Image (cartoon, rainbow, N blue to C red; front, side, top):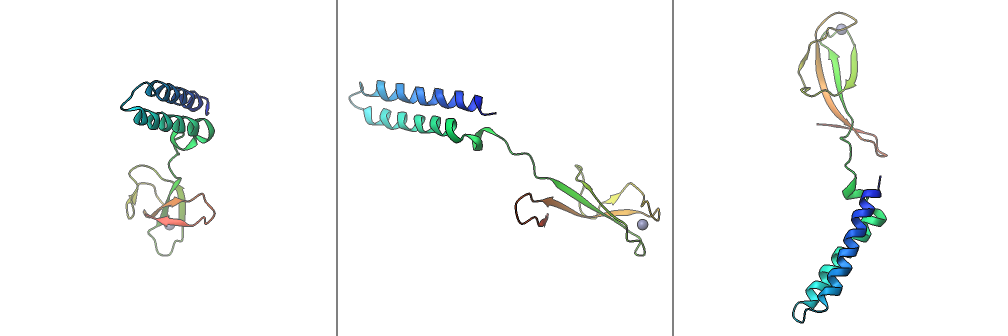
Length: 122
Ligand SMILES: [Zn+2]
């Protein structure tokens, strides 16, 4: 990763330099060309040096589904990966492995990866 953004950054910086250079010949708009060139060069340099933010797309946050058995005397619960279509209080197709009762989705959580690894209820 990063090679493409460096190439793009280098071309931006190069174009910016050319724009600045050519803009000097424009008696009216030279300062506009100058700022456009500065802008392109700074964009290019930021791509070359630390261009992570625009280049890499973040993966979706890990989401889990909290499934509980409907039987109040059965304490079975399961946390599995979120599947599309999951929502809170949705009845689950699968039977409870402990009592063969029906199960319901009790919660859908986004698992935060940063320091305070608390769960956010959607
Ligand atoms: Zn059960």
